[in-house]
Length: 338
Image 1 (spheres, rainbow, N blue to C red):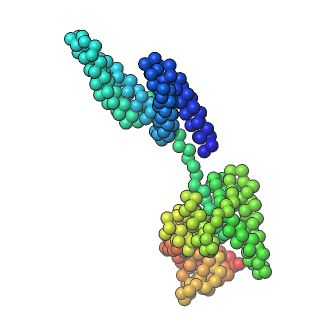
Image 2: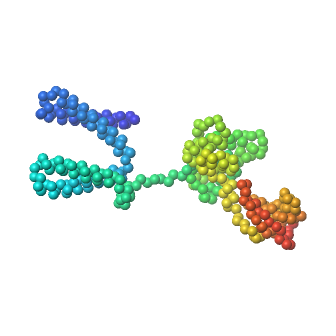
Image 3: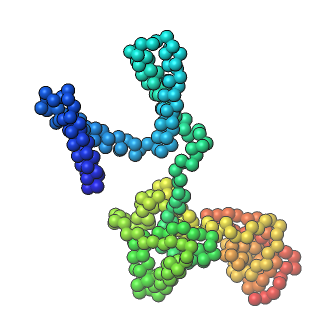
């Protein structure tokens, strides 16, 4: 602000003083004592108009300024050519001057308008297009995804880079969990702090802590508000937070959805080796798991609990909690006892 005031004061002083001396030295204005001050007033007015014109020009793209200027000069050239035939029989100067002024205004205005509006179609001025940097949206981490720990492994593989944001209230929540008297919660909190340290050590990742003054609402509500304020995304494992954020127009990256998408695709008829760990909900069913954690339900496998068997896939069910595979034991498919 101070710089703008100093600039305007300098411009006003130069214009005012120059106009004062010009008006003082015009012989026709000698009888008028106020001529110099009138000239100074005109100079100040010109300085004010120049300063206002600067603010207008700042809002006009460079392409439009150059295009309009080019169009204006071309229009003035056409005005000169249009006046030439009339100058052959309008020999009086007092007739030629108004005619040239009229044609200059008409063609100059047309050139100015067309040049300013059509400049975007000129490939020669394509280099004047402002370069728009591709800004990556910040990714806000919530407590669940930090404690989960898989995000650190994904970042280390190089599949994710960019700009991570850890709000201060998330750090405080992790600290509170790490100080819990409960052994399990304390272990989870310390694990989360260790994961953040691993993330900070990654060269392909920028991670920042943000201290925003938000309401006294819960951490999930604060996270959604902050994501909307920063124009960022939320990375979480929390299903409820996922739904709430989407309802408020915030983009969500769910690590569990990514894990489900990366699970091995299984089609009906394929053969799997599964260790049956426990009894299923329906009579005679057995339940086992693949290496990626996918649940496999095997019909008529209760008697094989504790054994590894070969099964044939009958169907695949996708649920909100993940994927379930239904299968049946192949004849003579007992592989080994466990």
